[in-house]
Amino acid sequence: MLGRLIQPDLEDLIAHRNFSALREAFSELSAPDISDIITDLPKEDQAVVFRLLPRKLAAEVFEYLKFPEQERLLRSLADEQAAEILNTVSADDRTAFLEELPAEATKHLLSLLSPPERERARRLLGYPEGSVGRLMTPDYLAIRESWRVSDVLEHVRRNGHDSETLNVLYVVDSAGRLIDDLRVREFLLAPLEKPVAELMTRQFETLKAADDQRTAVAAFRRLERVALPVIDSEGVLVGIVTIDDVLQVAEQKATEDFQRFGATAVFEEPYLKIALSKIIGKRAGWLIILFLGELFTATAMGYFEKEIARAVVLALFIPLIISSGGNSGSQASTLVVRALALGEISPGDWFKIVRRETICGLALGMILGAIGFLRISIWSAFFNLYGPHWFWVAVTVGLALTGVVLWGSLVGSVLPLAIKKLGGDPAVSSAPFVATMVDVTGLIVYFSVAAFVLRGTLL
Image 1 (tube, rainbow, N blue to C red):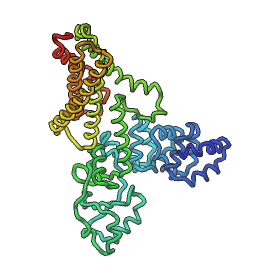
Image 2 (cartoon, one colour):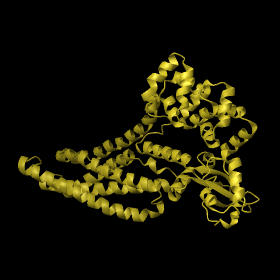
Image 3 (cartoon, rainbow, N blue to C red):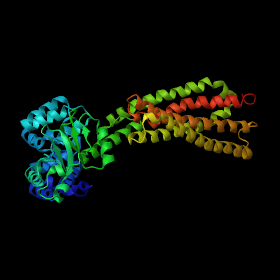
């Protein structure tokens, strides 16, 4: 937003090569604001602005940029300049950037790092993709329980500038195993001669380096912490995860779930910046699958061709029946997928969920069925649209709506649970996918009800 407001002025300064004025303008802005400005600038101007920033500020700005801008800017820099940036950015943000690159590019950039930073980067990249280990930073402050409060405060003064956050300090034993975490506030309010051991409760929450990143999101949501310690299989403290990184993961996972739920592949770039060919490619796959699924609708209608020929009036209500079933299934699927994502339910709750959706589906189906029955009855009374057997047509539509809506609710609720149980992503059970399944099966329900109710009259 800020970038759009001052972009004309910046472009004018860039065009006239007034670099001193540019430096002065950026010296008064924060790193997040500068990152917004760079993102809104034309691609050819982004590198010009980035090179003008002091190294420390450039590293901070780099951390706030999205991956496409980060990659583009680093490519525009000489190896020495790129090394300065990568050696200065925080370890967790550097890992997030490097893991997005092709293997050869990652190898080249690792070679530019200083030996200590290269070792740290390789260690973090060694954790599985999508794990907490890839998300954590090794920049934290550890203390010993034998210290006094004065020792801790002096330690913070000397080494605090290297820590990702100073809100929490971590107490470790001689082997590096975590034995407690304490808020800095407790040290600020305690007497200077008080031992750390007297402040400890040994009650703390941890994450494991091999945990899925969604576990970290759930933990932060539950505990309302700004940072959580990460331990290995032996309880040794290996890093911390901070709330800013978890918020990014939560946003990314939510975006991926929404995209999958809309029956598209995941987009790695902002909508307006991704190439049209990529958008078409990522949407085409699911559309083809859904189209092939809908072909079974034609097959189902062909199976009931004789019934349709003998009672053409039934064809008038096909869109009404299948759309109602698809809508109810989409509603149920949306509710269950979101509840799974929030940890409110699990596949083990399937019986409770099926019971609730059976009641809801039946009630909703009866409501829609009653509306459908009344609609046919009223139109027949005033316009005589549906012939002498309108009453039985109304009964057929009312019962079919009840059955299809009930069936849609059950399919929409059970499918995400089944996918989750099999180890898949429940978001794959998207609303379009559920609607397609219910379309096909809903026709079978509709014509089966019609064959039973209208036997001896229209059929």
